[in-house]
Image (cartoon, rainbow, N blue to C red; front, side, top):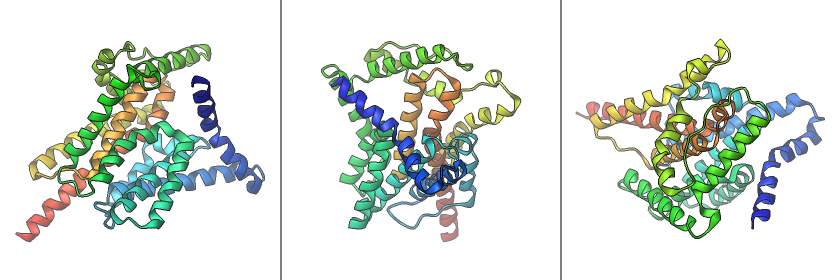
Length: 326
């Protein structure tokens, strides 16, 4: 079982290499051509992600121009434009979310075929991030017209967590605390061996259910607020710190105005927010190197920022419509 799993993980890790090897047939191994295509796929994925977040019930998306600023978030700007896994990840994630949304509401065969294709791409690039969305997909597919998406989707993730933690006591491949603990040790050893310059003390937790649950807030804050200003190696790294405070500001702003206007978040917002939180928590538990952390957390932080910006935007729009109606 362990050997088979390692083989599959190795194959997934080579997906990006195979993509660029295939592209080299047409590019003549010109690295700038590869960079351009990485940028094109990244922009396509970001566009699909914006359409998903700013669309409700399969309607035409209402994307404010200010939302395009997410393209210039430091981590998104840096990592989504490089010849790495992140451009392909954004492409697969954005397309999968958008076509699931379209198929879920309209149930057309063309959307189902597209969904299966992009889901396959997602599996080949980072299958474990796809798992983050599955509980939300499942309950959303069963209850397309959710009156209380926040409660319904949150409950599906809570029940999934209980199932996984209970199942992990019987099956090692479901033992999430042990898997995260082992991954943290592996990354720590590798960072020490490679003399990583931004090594920090990791989240201290034991591979037990109780310790894992108690340290979830620590892992989330660890992933969200690194690096602190005194950890920056160069002065021009300061935008990476400013990025850390964008989500907390958006969170409280959206929460305040949504509470005043009694505007509940859509299913899209809830799914993106919960998935973003899970991605940050996993990165916080497993990554003791700041340089790697700010790269790995990028999809999660992007989902959180877009989700709460969308919630605030639609709350404001709803309030304006009510005033005009009166």
